[in-house]
Amino acid sequence: MQRYDAVEIQTRWDGKRVYKTADYPVIPVQDSDVLKVTNTEDCLDDLAYKYYGDPTLYWIIARANNLGKGRMSVPAGITLRIPVDVNGIISEFGRLNAVQ
Image: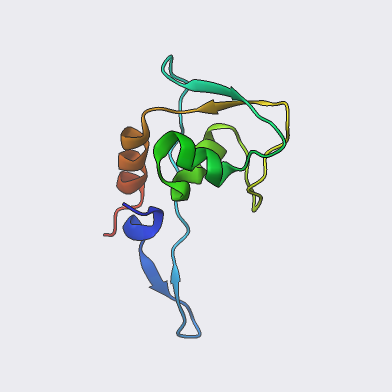
């Protein structure tokens, strides 16, 4: 499932169709999380591909570590938490954004 598959499309005042603002789940710390010390080459989408096999899941790593805000690069030398329960996180995202 792609991130916006579950997000409703709305029509703005000017007739343009846009995605409704998505709600994101809280990603609790779990014992199964992987810890990764970053280096200068690390980017969120590359890490998502490495750990999940899907670069579009970068938002999970970003949310778990309070990163992002338009940037894919990650500062070198920080420890990132890589959540392992991807299916549970995606399911919760879908539940929060279910099209009514």
